[in-house]
Every structure is written in C-alpha cells, then in structure tokens.
Image 1 (cartoon, rainbow, N blue to C red):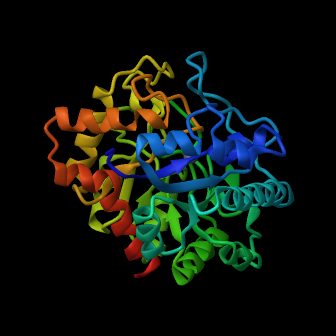
Image 2 (cartoon, rainbow, N blue to C red):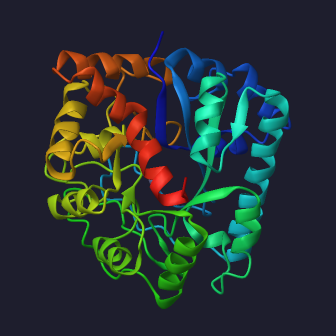
Length: 348
Ligand code: ZN
C-alpha cells in the first residue's frame, strides 16, 4: 500500500477553472490525465488529502516557469471584485467536485473529519485562499467564505494587495523585498486567529513574515516554501524564518517547483530528487522534524521529472528511505506533521 500523503498546496482548481469546461468537475473525478492532479492519479500516488488553493489570476501576471526570465516583472494588483468573481467560480467548481465525487472527496474543516475521510479512502479536501484579494479590506465578507469552509488564507500572493506586499519572484535574491502587512493585514491576521483560520506565510515578504509573527498567536506556517540556504530564491525561507517556524511549532512545506529547489534557480524538469532531500535535511535541521512536511505546488509549477505528477509521490518517499530517513520521520513529513499543526491551529 502506498503511504498516505497530505500535501500543503496545489493549484488543480485553477487548472480546471482555466479549461473553461462545464464538465471540469467530472474531468477531475474521472481523471483527465492533464497537469499533475486528478482523483485517480492522486489515489494511485497515495495523496490522501491537502490544501486546495483558490487563486484569482490577474490579467497578465508572469509566473516564472522559464529559464529565460528568472526575474519576471512584479505582478500588478487585482481588484476585489475581479478576485471575488474568480474565487466564487472556483468555489462553485469545488462544490461541483464534491457532488460529482459521491463521497470520494470530503470537505474538511476539522482534523477529525480529515482522519475519518482518510480512513474511509476519501480525499480530505482543505479549502485555501491564495492571496486574500477576494476578501474585502474591512473583512465584512470573511465570514461568508468561512461559512463555505475556508480554513486557510495566504494574506498575499506574489503581488501587492490591501493586506500587504507579496514577495516578487527574484533569483538570486533575499525574501526581504519591501514592506510587509498593512493595518488591514494585521486586522485580517487577528480575525483569522479568532476564527482559527490558518495563516499561510508562503508568498509574503520577509518583513511581512515577521509582521505576522508579531501579530499572530497561531503557529507560523509556510505551506509551500523551501530553504533559502539551499536555493537562493526570494520565495524561500531564511534560516532565521525556519527557526521561528520551529519555535512556534509551525510548518514549512517542501515546494516541488524546480525554480525554488535548484541552487541554480532554473526551471528545468530535468532535476533529480537529491536536491529535494537537501532542502528537507536543511529544513529539519533548522525547524525540527515535527515542523516540516510537503507542499507540492502540483498544477502550479514545473516539478522534477522523477516525480512527474501525483503518481510519482512514492518515488519521493523512496528517496527519503534511500537517504536513511526512518519510517517514523517519513510518517511525520508525509502526513503526521500537517495533522498536528492543523489540530493546533483549528482546535481539536
Ligand atoms: Zn503559491
């Protein structure tokens, strides 16, 4: 049997949304073989649950995925209305998946629900918003999203918004790229603490990370970010950030995006699994073995060919075994640590 894996980040909702097909939910459930994720391939690879991002794309932001430009232009801001339009469309797509799956996918807002879903062989689905543009700056509609199951928020994506400044994609560069949270962003963090919504620090500037550390009472979580000491992308975490994540019993999820993994910053899929182990080793050394997991970025990035898509997850598990990781540690990285931090963040 393949090891059950909980994953900190994927963009399959965006991939399906962008096909503009009225049958997108059915394509996911039956398997469309496109991108990295659909339900049959997730089952085959042992992906038992994860954070599903609702990401509102801008008109023309550049996501770095080509070696020709490791320093793309900074993405422009997106209006609340435009963000809300695509967020609601992706929520509707999510709900269509729940219906279409007939129990094979479970909407989860508690760890008890996640454990029950996993035990029943149903995919444990966590709803995450990647960049809070759809939330009104006065937070007046946050409750609506909460009622629809939202339990994880990245205050910013890699662009500016009302809540703060996202880190531009830069290589080689420090994550220290300008201002952090705005007063509205601080209020959002406080309200997420109150509602026990997880706050994801993956796309915020280093200043913003420390702003969140100051305001938030919850464990510090970067759902899909790597070690800056191994690959000097602005999207990765410094040693000091990794130590703070460990000190608050938070989490850092290993991102499979080759441009955030490789020491040369390139986006080639011709990338071996060894470099992923170098990140895991470093993240575990700094944050501790209870505070590191996986955050694939499936369907949102170019990933190493030896993984390929969800079916390749067992290859990463095997690489951990080959590197001498024991079964206990592998269990923590693949699912145990996510369940722990979610329980501490959401409440038991
Ligand atoms: Zn992301």
